[in-house]
Amino acid sequence: MAQSMKAAIFVEPGRIILGEKPIPDVGPLDALIRITTTTICGTDIHILKGEYKVAPGLTIGHEPVGIIEKLGSAVQGYSEGQRVIAGAITPSGHSNASLSGCGAQCGGPGGHGWKAAGGWRFGNTIDGAQAEYLLVPDAMANLAPVPDGLTDEQVLMCPDIMSTGFSGAESGKVKIGDMVAVFAQGPIGLCATAGARLMGASLIIAVESIPARAEIARAMGADHVVDFTKVDPVSEILKLTGGRGVDVSIEALGTQTTFEAGLRVLRPGGTLSSLGVYSEDLRIPVDAFAAGLGDNKIITTLCPGGKERMRRLIDTIGSGRVNTEPLVTHHFSLDDIETAYDLFAHQRDGVLKVAIKP
Image (tube, rainbow, N blue to C red; front, side, top):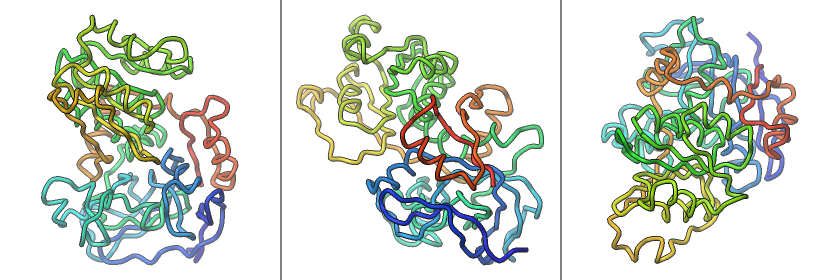
């Protein structure tokens, strides 16, 4: 086995390059995965732009599909050569956060200590998935086998995009018969739309201006698509709900405009489920917040991880309940990852998600 590998390395704001790194050593609870497919996330673009700070020299990426190359001496229940995914969030399974049912906030190696988003380690606090090999910590809590009948592209959205999007509907507690608005139909918003449909929403209104994304949104379950460049989305959503407002609004972009609109379309007692990564302070206008007297809820969610979450998502794909393959619009080799970043960062050529294969 070679001693070094290719990896996408953060150098400084504005620069992620393809470089060489040593292949990681495998600790007792770890697994070394040979990456077969990965992708670029919108959060990686926040890192590239310097809006989310990580250490120079870090390998980026948190959406791995691959094959177990080597298992740690204490890892049981898996075998080398097995095809697996790991979630973008890798809880230890034994931290206070994990044992309290919030593994996404499981901070630090081994799960000790706490900080917001602490469960997000790949490409944040440890080397990530845009490389030939990935070291997965706490492998028994995080590796989920991929059935032979599913392709890499079919399960590529499970580690982050599908888990995050679905969690927008889950955290918002969408119920059968609910009216739901989803602001922005990028990959996460599209999965939030699909999640709302799976949870029983009777009316789903997506907000999106790009025709190709609007078409996919309808396939994912949107009953109406509101083009915010042609009409005021708040007025249009209120009109579509007969003036009632929606039970749940899901914010999937991370801007002041969409966050505020998500508040304004809620019925009294409704929930704003926030998925966006915000790079500036948010303001809550007093009228949109009903002066704090509207019985509304604002809830945030970090992508749920862990092997059981991944199993559920893989099974949802395998059962045909949802199809995320249309979200993979472009393919690149790892050698061309700088080109892939340029395309994805500038949202050219109708890109939604890219598949990157070492």
